[in-house]
Length: 115
Image (cartoon, rainbow, N blue to C red; front, side, top):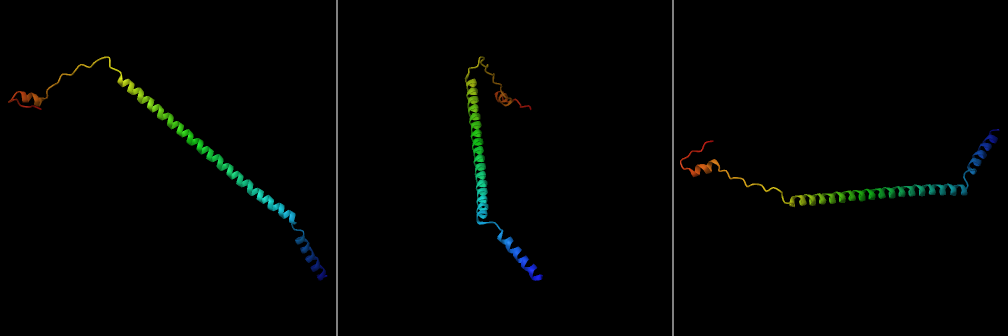
């Protein structure tokens, strides 16, 4: 009886081993693995392309904003220069020169300077 059970156990083990995946199943599993890797690589490349496109768009937008600010600044400077160049309606009356205390003392010899 022991020998029969041992033979049955060995036969069962051999049948489990023999029932493993066939060459076609192994090839299909390998192809599925390669397809999966290719899909991941494609998704990665698409993601990188989208990120690079977004970066380029952001750069272009930034440059456009800088250029607009530059043009606005130039326009303001030209406008300010045009306003400065306009002649004034009223001419300022010349100021009378006031003599300082030291100059007055120089005119009158012997005068003392008070502070």
